[in-house]
Image 1: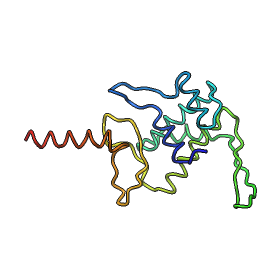
Image 2: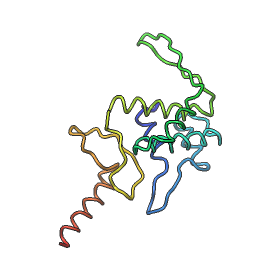
Image 3: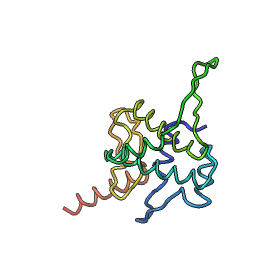
Image 4: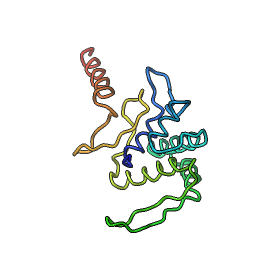
Amino acid sequence: MLSDEELLLGVVNSAPTIEGRPTDDLEGAGGRDLARSWGGTGSARELAHLRRARHALQAMVRGDEGAAVGELTDILDGAVRIPHMTPNGVAWDLRVPDDRRLAVEAVLAWSTVITEFPDRLRACANEECTRFLVDHSRPGTAKWCSMAVCGNRMKARTHARRAKS
């Protein structure tokens, strides 16, 4: 089972820009397979709900709450969490139509991540990148979704600019 952070990052990072071109991992057979790998059904309706949730969550992380709050409210409409006891404490069952379950779970994952890691969910600092990260660094200064890709590119550009002047 995916952690909240894994699901959230999987959803918000499912529309990367690759070599300057936007892509959508939630399209076609690949999207159906991806949704199934997250525990979903892979139905067309489920993918549509996931794309709506992705768009709204990306806007929230970027600080554009305007329409995103209403969209996320619509996604959560009618979802119910029912508590039940287990030997390990209280567990929660989510009651929502199957085609909306993953989108609702992504919104709930976002809420958990921003509560557990305040101010640590952010967009990659590389302006050409459309990915997001949760900063787990001690000082809370991580900027890039990947040090090997975006971090390396940005540092190389900074070095080239310095060398030029």
